[in-house]
Length: 257
Ligand code: HXC
Image 1 (cartoon, rainbow, N blue to C red):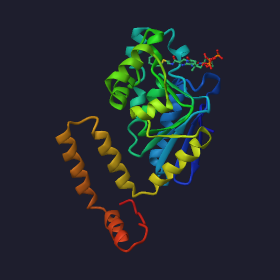
Image 2 (cartoon, rainbow, N blue to C red):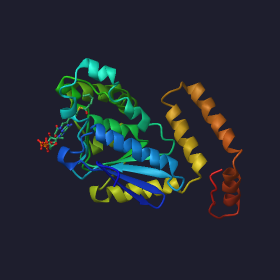
Image 3 (cartoon, protein in one colour):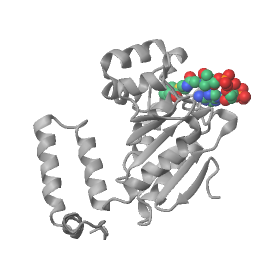
Image 4 (cartoon, rainbow, N blue to C red):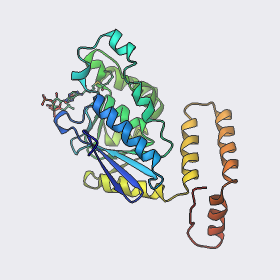
């Protein structure tokens, strides 16, 4: 395979990406980032693929950014290379990406899961931002995305103590969409992704874009953004097909335009 740290499978319209660095509990090093960016670019460019799932192993989704890779770096190396900025590219795909998390999602692993559009958690999942124990902080968006997901109290406590949240707490707090028995996690995530991939592609993009706008815009601006996108979909063939199909009591047949 062209990927050193990933296993990629296409299951119908779903791209399943499995992080595969078991010797380091899927710690995210430069190779993992390069592989993930290449995989997400290929996914984005492939019109046969509608939704992606990113998963890890039963023990670890990812145990963080690679500590051994960062250990010797100084400020000039970090700032000069804008270390971790490459991860922003990962969030730019306009198709949905689901994180299927079993075991540890710590530090950068938790941050990667939160970069995805939503998280499905196995009952074994554990989330945390333990960077403070290394005398640093989250660096891949964790302080911001965790605060948005679970609110200030839990985000602050987790970042300041480094404690982990189990799947139950993560679901109660709004960090994960749903909890699934560990043995069913990947199948359930692929099934959910297939449901999404079966929807009209432009409507999928528009729904993703507008929910994300809720985190970047004020309410009235966001509501207007939603309405403009909604209006725009009435210029598509699939809107006519979707509403005709409903009235005619049959499934829609999407053209992606
Ligand atoms: C590099 C890592 C790693 C990491 C684990 N390993 N996490 N290597 N970077 N983040 C390696 C270990 O060194 C070890 O390699 C092997 O994976 C197995 O890990 P163990 O610790 O032996 O496993 P276990 O005892 O089961 O403990 C699991 C664990 C622990 C609780 C998840 O590995 C752990 O605490 N990891 C670090 C978690 C963390 O602090 N993550 C945040 C990283 S910083 P060897 O060669 O010994 O077998 C980050 C944010 C970036 O992500 C922002 C700026 C820092």
